[in-house]
Image 1 (cartoon, rainbow, N blue to C red):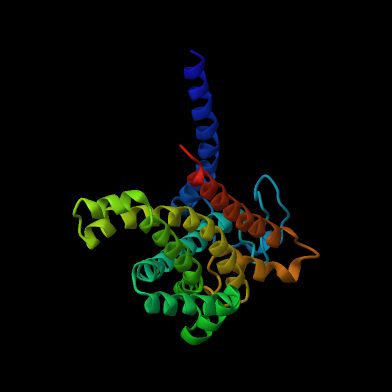
Image 2 (cartoon, rainbow, N blue to C red):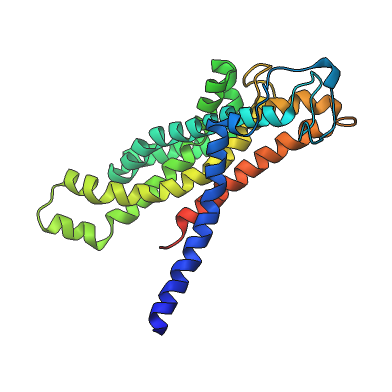
Length: 274
């Protein structure tokens, strides 16, 4: 009886934090895919007689300098920011997975060359590297996602390489070789699945970093052009009204912080033991 109760408590203690970690992300996904469920207002349409209205029952987050509803723009802008962040993380994984596997499974020279390249990239601040790439390929939402994704490749590569080396030295991998499995059979059945599992947790954590980086780059003016509802761009447009209309920058900033926090919660939930 006591054992069953202890197991229930242990399962409950793990499940509840996982649920709390997943719910904010699910809410963000719902907002990004169906913003019309939360606001009927057009994020691009404004009324001149409602310019710079403070938050009220009619406009929860107030209106901007063009009379557009800030709450509606934040809801519709979530798709632009979140989709760019997810694309950035996907690009990072697509490039880092083969590099990490090659560094962990290849010879000393190949591994050393890949790690040396990763160390060189890690020596450059990610934001500076992203801005350098955007300078070469030009501004735009897709270009921003590509630049942020490339800037995160080195960290993923080193982590995947470390996991490959760790898994390769385990007893069950040696046992698989002992029963006659070929090298590639062991790689695809044992090394790849067990090495890439931690990458999922890191990917969710880096999703929050990507949201911050993309919003920062869009704030600098390298993202989508106005009047696109994008959180970083909204902060840029509202910075000239900080003294008279604080809500123009505060609420988009809170949306960015909440999204990064939700990604961190999801990463912690994934890392929890079952």
